[in-house]
Amino acid sequence: MSIARVGGPSAPAAVGGADASRAVEAAAAPGASEVAAPSPAEQVRAGSMSVAAYVELRVQEATRHLEGALDTAQLGEVREALRGEWLSEPKLRALAEAAIGRPLEDP
Image (cartoon, rainbow, N blue to C red; front, side, top):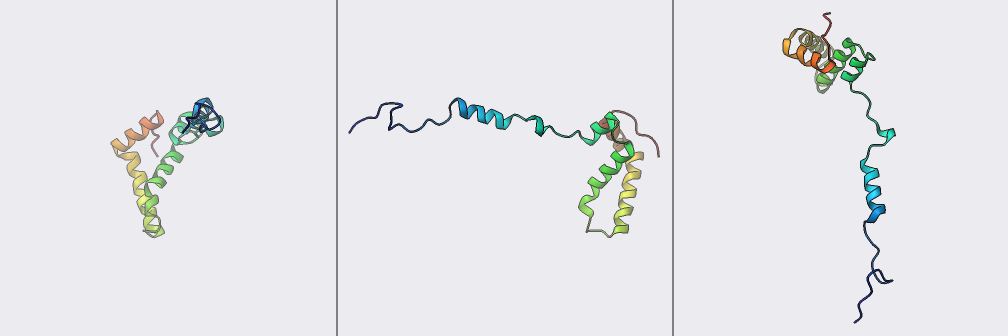
């Protein structure tokens, strides 16, 4: 029984190495094409989204799970109530103001 030399013709191909580590690093590192879009709060801070649009977006997100469970009129009432709470309830208002970095305008 013979023993093959390390790295000799009967040795298995190396796993890993510099090429493999570079491939892993490249896959893990975000590329220029993978840059995340700014969040809605960042868009408000930058002036590219109005506060009203921000509130509406948050209301839509918060009630999305009700679509299909409520009829259109009921869903509209829930959304209208949430919009009112968003602007009048001090804790919700403070959260929104902290997210966008400035006071909410009154309707």
